[in-house]
Length: 350
Image 1 (cartoon, rainbow, N blue to C red):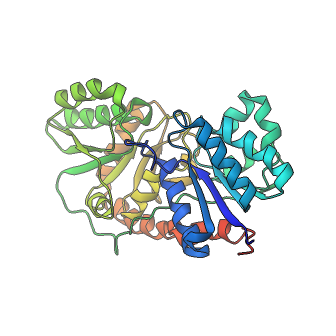
Image 2 (image 1 turned 90 degrees about the vertical axis):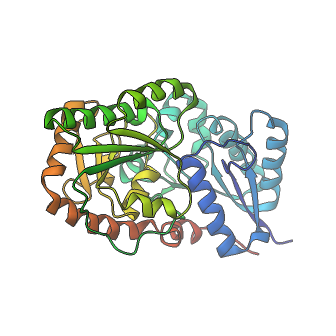
């Protein structure tokens, strides 16, 4: 009997309110590309999003994948890796399948260092696909198996052309989970300072994305306080989001989130022809090239962020050039192109 291809990861279909972010987006994206290349009937997927309530069935389904698939792709989140990686690494000894791990985010090296038992299991993965060259270099310390960079990608459609920005007010945006570690508070304060120094509203900030539940009251207070220049806009889905973001001047990304990897927000900002002002945090310098696709500033330094926003506002011409460069860069994030390195490696005898 011909064997299938297994995918075990956070698809978000098993819970009413999935965690919207890079993990779910990339897992779903790879699932779609697998179906296109190999046919839906040849893909066996296990959704780990409700693992807390379905531990027994999750383990049962993972074993089924190991028993019936020639290639198993695992995409665990920080909690799931403690179950999924050991289980599928041990089962691999018996079933001899190809084990592939497309890494999402930048937290893997930290958890491998913190959980010694995971290092042994990680060495049994045949093919590792981190999102950046820097993470690839970090992971090389844990394995001698094949490692190649596979960037993030988006299923959304990029804009056709980078339109010039003509609005007299400089409209900035953020596009991420709304939580302090993503730098939302810093972005709001920087825009407030710019307007305070100017003596009028010369810049605004629109905040997009799901508000982390435990910070709902905090952000309601913050947005009410800064309502003259900061607005919460909610969550955008579908291709309409890319078109909406193309109307802004730049995206602000002052993150200091510990597990930051290659954020979907940066990918989709480029797809909108939107340059990014980003903190020099984790892998951001690999993604946002100074003066080419955006600007970098020192992490946690609101003064530096404020000055960088002012610098960007002063040079419309430079930012206009960057709009075209970001859109050109976004061609690397087409699903077919980004996933080719993974799909071409899969052993499939269907």
